[in-house]
Amino acid sequence: MKITVLAALLLAAAALPAAAQSGPSVQEQMACRGDASKFCAEHIGKPPQMNACLRENKSKLSDSCRKVVESRGG
Image (cartoon, rainbow, N blue to C red; front, side, top):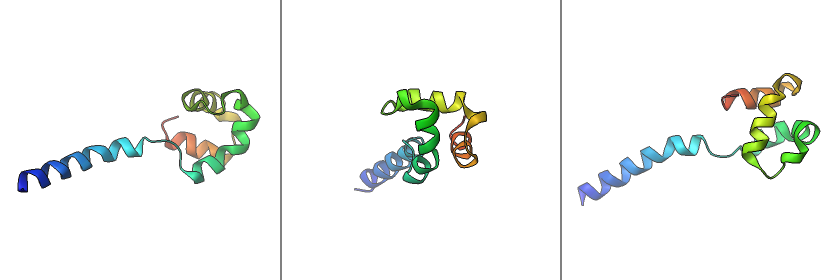
């Protein structure tokens, strides 16, 4: 029983970094909505391409969206 609980805790802890790298939060999406439409409209619905496009256009982004991009490694 204790081994099962320990294994479950280890699996949960291992999943936390993966969750941190998940898709953007609602707040992040709202911060970048205008910039995404303006600079990267052709990539809407394609997260990897959208992320790359926003990184490529970082100097043109609004302050709030630039902060999101930078917080996600861009």
